[in-house]
Length: 150
Image 1: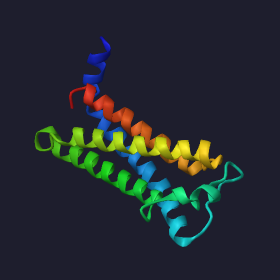
Image 2 (image 1 turned 90 degrees about the vertical axis):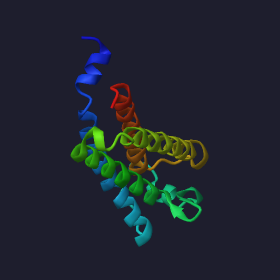
Image 3 (image 1 turned 90 degrees about the horizontal axis):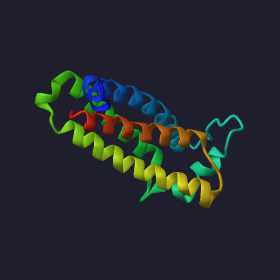
């Protein structure tokens, strides 16, 4: 069995994977959004400089916290993936391109924000890195779905 056949055989599983990644992303992004609006420092357990990163000028884009953007991203991906699981390909042929587009945009944003953390702020927030990792993983899973012909 070649790689393409494996992708096609397990194609529907990528919607479950997107759902699972989104639930994890919602949990982390909710915590970051809460800490932003409650003006409370996040628990970093001595790993990184979360408070510095989250209060920097880069923690908001046009007044919107990037943590909230992450939360909205993962809610949108979860909504699409669960609707797609419930509705089937016939009723939602646009779901795969939509998820792929969102994941591509989300990955571009977290790549920029990670660059800012490492090279401009010279500080890393472990929570932010986990959101970035989950976002990049959603892109990988979206590519899997696209290659499988979903």
